[in-house]
Figure 1 (spheres, rainbow, N blue to C red):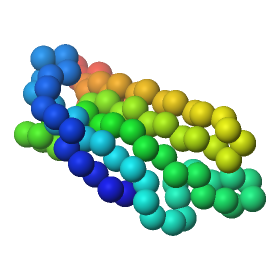
Figure 2: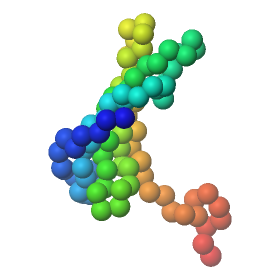
Figure 3: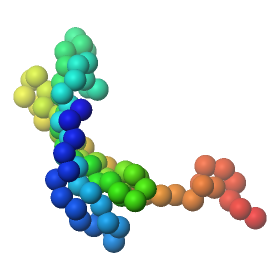
Figure 4: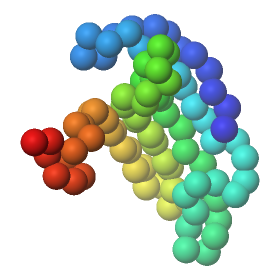
Length: 87
């Protein structure tokens, strides 16, 4: 992957770095059923004080001229969400 800081900003009142990424290595994360590489590119919103990933937008252009766009926003959940709530 190649990363480049695009700008600084805020997301939900949290200071962030917006970082562009382009997949340059092989094999790629996404591949066709015939194992052909399909590189991705996009942006990531990162809290520079913690390194926490807050949002990702990724674009993947397939070999058949189909574009897949993914936009994910992450939220911090209480640690008990996966178990029992505190008493």
